[in-house]
Length: 89
Image 1 (cartoon, rainbow, N blue to C red):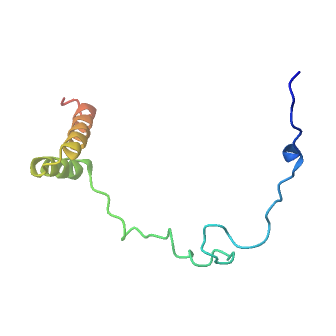
Image 2 (cartoon, helix red, strand yellow):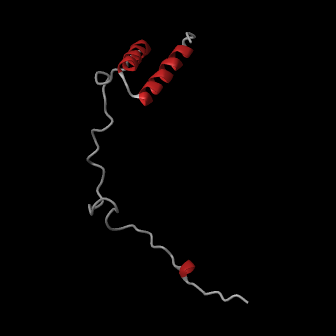
Image 3 (tube, one colour):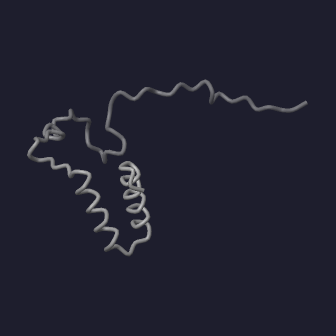
């Protein structure tokens, strides 16, 4: 017959923490999100998205000037994907 020890650990209820400091926030109290009011607001003048032709020329330029093999592999796959999309591959 095996001897088993009886434990009360499974009967302990964890306390739901609704007060106190936020852990990992270096002791700073809970605050309402008033500091992020200006985030996420951009105008059309702030954003400039290059065309696919401009992006492709930047990719070619970066591919010709880099020595990093990992970057070259990424640039090559991006160029290939665009050329496949245009039926030029």
